[in-house]
Image (tube, rainbow, N blue to C red; front, side, top):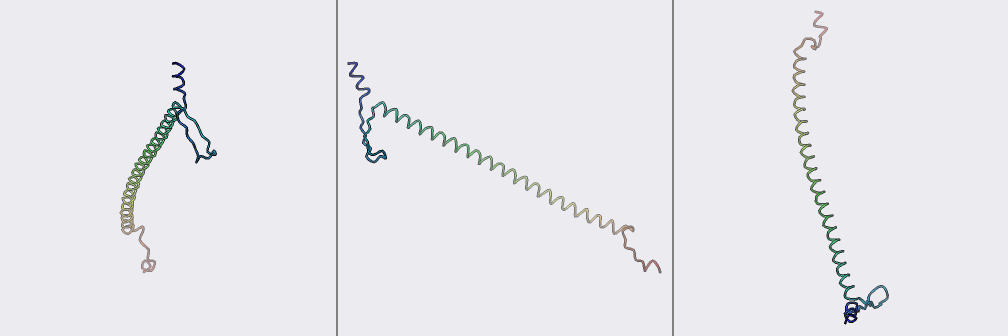
Length: 119
């Protein structure tokens, strides 16, 4: 009986003829255990590939989100700098006008007319 059970476990149950294969159409024999192991490895490889793809997608999504936040921050900074620039330009105009008014009111900066002074 024990000999019969061992034969059942290792008996070749699948015969696959690979007529379309690149190795010239040789026949291969697989045991049930080998097929189950192969299927489990395929599942694990598929799960591993899916896991790697999922991790890569997650990493890329996080990177895109981080870049979007960085872009938003930079855009806000650019807007703030534009506003500050406009304020400074306005202040410069006011100061320029003030300096012009002071210069025109001061006798030091008046143009001298040599002909009128000689008379």
